[in-house]
Amino acid sequence: MKAIVINEYGNRDVVNYVDVDRPEPKADEVLVKVRVAGVNPVDWKIRDGMGERLGLKLPIFLGGEIAGTIEKIGGDVRDFQVGDAVYGIVPSGGYAEYAIAKVGEIATKPQSLDFENAAAIPLGALTAWQAMFDLANLSNGQRISITAASGGVGSLAVQIAKAKGAFVIGMASGKNEQFVRDLGADEFVDYTKQNFEEVVKDVDVVFDTVGGDTFERAFQTLKPGGFLVTAVQFPSAETAQKFGVNAARVYCKPNAEQLVAIGKLVEEGKLKAHVSTVLPLSEVKKALQLSQSGRTRGKIVLQIVT
View 1 (cartoon, rainbow, N blue to C red):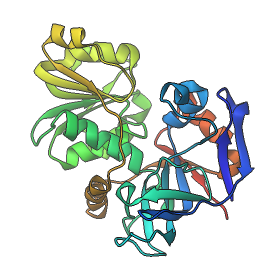
View 2: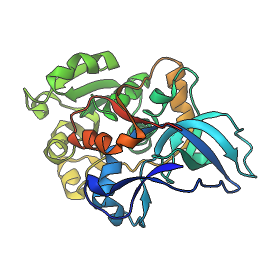
View 3: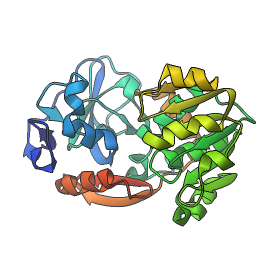
């Protein structure tokens, strides 16, 4: 089968499109025939060297976000059957024609989604869900500010927060204002024209996917006791204490139960993906370059051709 593998860390030149043996599922696993794989910043960050810091061992099969059909099931699997359409996050390498998944890492694909849109949801939606609810305990009626609200994660976060009854402030560049408002944002802030910390005040939660200066300034927008959760930064306990708030970093984990809840929002028409670019698996280098540019709106996905 075809798969994307790196044997060393570096730039796009270390990304290899190669033939490898098809894996076999163990007792608690399934083999998924991948139809579409989602592209995420973590993929090129691992390629650039983050994989070593995470303790991953070379060679590394890139990718993790998938949508496809079950090709084969392990002996102890009872919840799925061959042919079932599924989506989720796998650690075994999603940029491939076939991928191994444990039962707790995938869920049944929402019927209303095609494979392209299904592959654009799991990592972003789970990251947002775990950040806003597991860590920040966002609840109905609270105010949340979401940075990069037009991005792959932010656009899903806006919809999920709104579906759960929060008052949502979306932050992005002005060209994306209508897009963010159409997602359900109650207010929009153009960070290119105003200092957002001067207009956003007394929010209960900030969900940040930008980091750097944006992350540091976001502390000023929280009410006392509020919660800043980030997907990209390492929060300082001293800074959080200075502002009288809480801060944490979210590390997305596969969670089939949460994927089911996310799928319900999809079926209810409260959550949809926004796919910006579809490329074949063989053009993975271009896909990673687009992701790294940070200029895409919505999601980049790879079409797997078998």
